[in-house]
Image 1: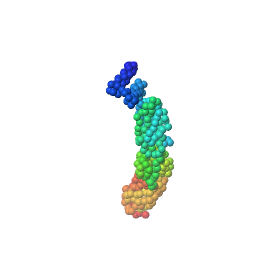
Image 2 (image 1 turned 30 degrees about the vertical axis):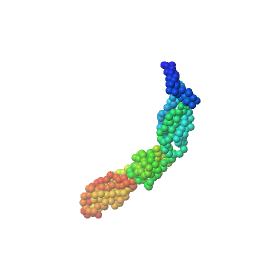
Image 3 (image 1 turned 90 degrees about the vertical axis):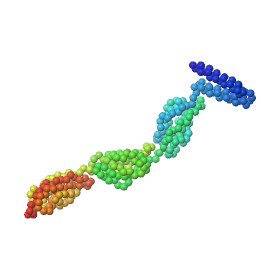
Image 4 (image 1 turned 30 degrees about the horizontal axis):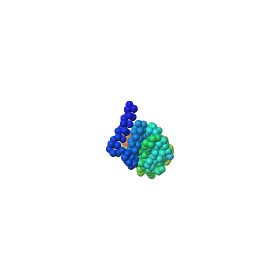
Length: 321
């Protein structure tokens, strides 16, 4: 089969020469002779390349550009032939030799910016150069973003509400014993709610902004955060006797936390503060009668409010002392 192909091409050459001579294109003078010889030489060269199976290298993408350390951009391509790599556009590379198969090369860039004109070519040992392979456009950014806290944060339950400001868009990463509801933020100011696992004092929570090029900001520490989301618990210790002759009956209760007292119903207290532990107070009654709707609640310093404690009913009779 191969011999038939060779004979056929040789026949084609002879036929072409005879056809050119029949059309008056033979070597009649020096000028036409040179033109004739050049044509034959070019045709022969093409035929020889075909006989050798010579083709230009073919390049294909296998990996999109990605920024690595030291401002180098990783890029992958496949070449159908071995040869020498040449670069064009605003990129350059240290890899000069290509093998037949897959390549992972590093492109060097000089400054930050968008790169959309980089291309590579491969020239084989016979001087055949591939079509330029355009490197997909990419952005080079090796400047770290900046993250700032705006104003003071506010503790609400087991969450910290705060405003932060970013110099560019990116992903938020939380470190320490905290997590947040904001995973991606735009350039400018954003509200974020940061959660903590339970009551206690935390000083290890930090926020870091990572931009699309993988550059990380300096961690933004929250400082010391005190979380107290547990409401106080009240319990009656010594109720008022069911029948009394005084408008200032003594009353004892226990609280798990210190805070501010609030009374409802017909009773009032002679104090508005309570300390953690057992407290002895006096209930103030305005007139004789049944007191069965008295309740009190306690709100601690973190604004946690207890469940209302119902004061056991009692009756104030006439003849108060």
